[in-house]
Image (tube, rainbow, N blue to C red; front, side, top):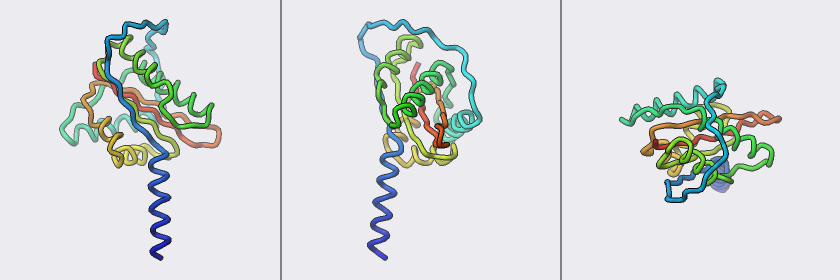
Length: 167
């Protein structure tokens, strides 16, 4: 029985470590420019709205400011979800480009990102992020705004990208 519990613990840790990751970036003096334009319209699905509400409810419950939603950041989050689905990966590829875009177009001073996949509910992904030090640090971070996308692949697996910004 002890061996089974040990194996199960390893499996849970392995899945947890491979089903979500966190990353952050801060503004630099790089003056590179982008040709992208600011996206002002984004249609939120129920999972996105619920996850954003849960994140803000959590932040308020520990004495932090709620984050303001920005459509452009949600659009960039959705772009990354589509990339992860198309490539059957979960990662932060091109995070630097996303963060630089948000810094340039929105004047962000700091950007952070959480990604995850496979969670079926907003509550489950939030719990997964809060159980991970790096993700929790982003959720509790010194940010003022955020965007989030929840995209479902052809097999029904949900991909999450949550980008935080201090503007």
